[in-house]
Image 1 (spheres, rainbow, N blue to C red):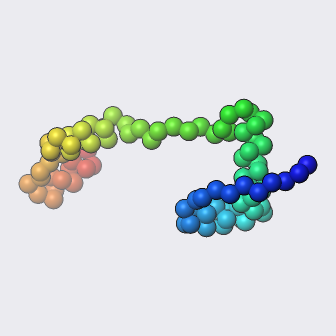
Image 2: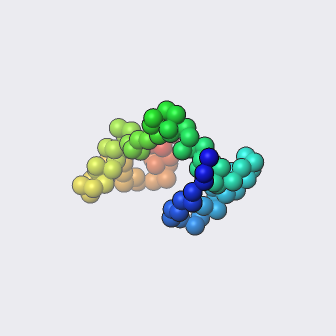
Image 3: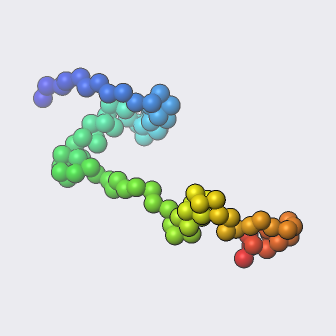
Length: 88
């Protein structure tokens, strides 16, 4: 089987982290990339789930309120009332 070179760009910190991870697993970045390609071809898809990080309903409500400059979680008159709300 003939090998070819493939060049791709990646964030330097991401590469450093990936190199460290794969070294701990006993392989190079090149080997890990080959594993990914082989598994993709074998499964005829990306071999893991890719999805948007969708916030839950409470987080979405807070984000919507913040965009509208609505403060649905305060202000609080005291630290005690804030702590009561946080512990509720």
